[in-house]
Amino acid sequence: MHFDYLIIGQGLAGSFLSWNLNSRGKKILVIDEARPFTASRVASGVINPVTGRRMVRTWMIETLMPFAVDAYTRFGHELGTELISQCNIIDFHTTPQMKLAFAECLPEEGEYLRPAADENKWRAHLNYAFGYGEIDPCWLVNLSALLPAWRSKLSALGALSEEKFRWEDCIIEPGKIRYQNHSAEKILFCEGVAGFDNPYFRLLPYARNKGEALIVEIPGLPRNHIFKQGMVIAPWKDDTFWVGSSYEWDFTDDRPSEAFRKKTGDYLQQVLKHPYKTVDHIAAERPANMERRPFVGLHPLMPSVGILNGMGTKGCSLAPYFAAQFTDHLLGNTAIEPAANVQRFSRILSR
Image 1 (cartoon, rainbow, N blue to C red):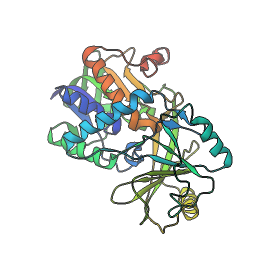
Image 2 (cartoon, rainbow, N blue to C red):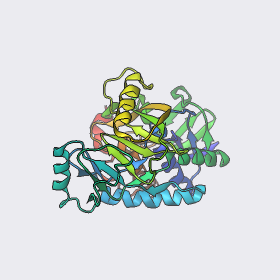
Image 3 (cartoon, one colour):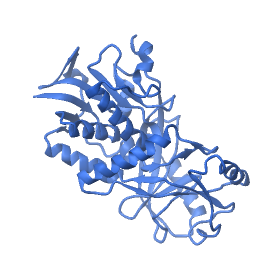
C-alpha cells in the first residue's frame, strides 16, 4: 500500500505531526510499538513559561504557549475530550535567597510572575517556611487522554501499525521509501530515545537523560494548582497526583529506582499535611539534547528522510508548534525556525 508519509513513533511529537498531516489530507501510516512507559507517557504535562532557579523565560514561550493552547483545544475538540486546562504553579521558596530571587525577577517577568496575595493560603495543605509566588499562566496537558485517544483514531483510520519499526525491513532511496509491503514518499522519525540509534540522525547531539515520578493519591489536596517546592506535585488522572521529576544523567537502565522512591516518599512526608498513598512508580528515558532545541526537518543528504525529535522536558510546548511548522515545510516548503532546523547540523550529518 502506498502512503504519502510513514511516521515512526506515536509519542507527543508523532501524534501532533500525524494529526497535522492527516488534517491536511495526506495519507499517513504511523508505525509504533505499544509500550506503557515512554517519555511522553510518563511526562507531567506541565507547560511552564519560566524555568530554572533564575526564573528566566522559556525559549520562544511568547509564541509557543498561545500556539499550544489553541492546538490542544482544537485537537481535543476532534477527539471529544478536554486536553488542556489552566493550572498555575504555586512556587514555594525553599530558602530566603530563593524568595529574594523571585522578588527581584518580578519587575522584569511581571507578565508571568505574581507575588503571594495571602502567604498563609496553603498552610492547611502544605508545610513551607519562606512563602511562595505564583507562575501565571501555566497549563496542564492531559497526555493520558490524548495519546490513547489519537491512537484509537489512527487505528480506525487504518493509519496505525502497532509493531516495532525494523531497519532491516526498510529500504530508503531518493524520493521513495519501502517498508515491508508499504511504500511512501517520505519517512519521518518521531521515535524519541530510539533516535539515539537512528543511522541517519545518531550523530546529533543527544544527551541521555532519565526521569522518574511517583503517582500518588492525596485526599484533600486541591487539584486546581500545581505545587512546586523542590519537586513538583501536579494533578494526574483518576484523582491522583504526579510527583517528580528527577533529571538523572548517569544511569544504567530506564526502570524505576528504589532510591527515587525513597527520596520522593521522604519529600512527601515533609511537605504534605495530608496522608498519601503511592499507587504507581513510573520512569522513562527522555530524548533530550545538549542544545535544548528540538531537531526538526529533512536530512541534508537524503530529503526523503525527516525528523521531529529532541524535545527533552519541554515537549508539551514544543511539539504542537514544530509539528505544524514541519507540516507547512513539507507541504509548502516554508521555512523552519533556524534554531530548530536540523539543517544546522548539515556538516555532522553529511559524514
